[in-house]
Image 1 (cartoon, helix red, strand yellow):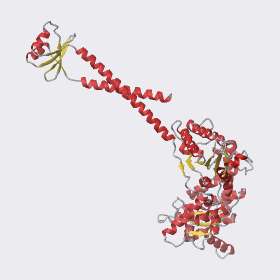
Image 2 (image 1 turned 135 degrees about the vertical axis):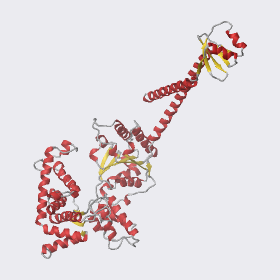
Image 3 (image 1 turned 180 degrees about the vertical axis):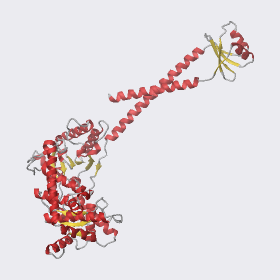
Image 4 (image 1 turned 90 degrees about the horizontal axis):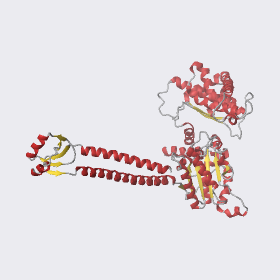
Length: 588
């Protein structure tokens, strides 16, 4: 219906344009200079043989054409011998101009009809072309990676996630075993967790282990402005999958099309696409051999219809690797790299807390690149150390001549404050490096604070993290005064605010606000006035505590800052040595 209406509008526009063009054409064609002759001038021109043609019609005026092609008009004498006079003087007489005008009108109408027919033809061709283009866009080109044999041997860590997926491999290889017991294998699996933890790799490994085709698409591929295009792509994808019989469909970033629908701010096209996905998944036959795996960083924002049994039955968390998993990942990515004999991957795994699998791979790759640049025989610990901080903070700036003396001093006290408070209130944390060398990611310096691996974070841990984050600003205020604090603590304040907000709003760690999850009560949109007031009070109390800690250890703060100004970078051994000397009284 909509297509016919568009076609009709197109035809009408074409006809109107043709009519206007035709009128303009005839206006221009008929726009010739017409000479108005008196009857005497007309008779004189006849006698001189200058008149070529006269059109005799029953009008007060007669028209004609002179020998030079000029049109003229003059009075009609209406005498009986007028025609005879014209013929005697060799003037051609035409008595059917009205017929000529009728023929012109008929020709004009014919021209319009022909033009309109051409418009209709072009409209039909345009409609067919639009249909072909729509079909082409709907026929999404999924990436068939069936020949890329990624298996679970290529994945280190994520043992729990791998175990949850192994039975799907068995199903794809031996579906009759499950049919015998009347079991229905999950039609869909959602892998959720932080970026870089190996969700895509797990999906590839499932297809590789089962030796079936792997179709990888992104949720954004189905988000289109054209009505029905996203749903068409969904149907095209599943049609291809059914043609393969057994396969794995992987939809990355499924939250792009599967967010919760509130019925108010929804998008009709997005809803239509999501409904198409739900319909296709519900249309599977039992044990059909198609498994849909989706990946997201935020499981909580997905629509409930996606997560119900019969759609995405399983939700598997793929979290950050623990120390043992990091060790395995580092060993996996070091197999093809010439490492020096003194490199301890187990120690490196302990230093890379909160590193994802992708970051660990990037760490080893950056190390190899640095070694290749130097034409070294082996990847040394210095290459890994430099790559470590490149992944975290970016490359060191080579030209530091534009940095003023006061800026270096402020940075030194700021970073020394972070390191000192870490050592004083959280000795179990490792401060592996403190530097005042600016990085290419915009940091003026940084203090690398690595907490121990833990399953849970206690309230004390979170409070200590806030104090450590605020220590840089507290050191600036202690040394230079409140009026001279800088913008260098912006990222620290952001981190501290996130932790305070989580403690109060999410984890129920505040007596005044209570043991409630305000994300459930108010949603994730923001904070109410009472929570903001309490967050501010907690932050101010912790900031005062941090200033007191630094004030009580000001001499140690100044020693660390001066050492940073001299060496620019301190490692954990340097910091421990300085603190031991101060504690023993040998360094004042």
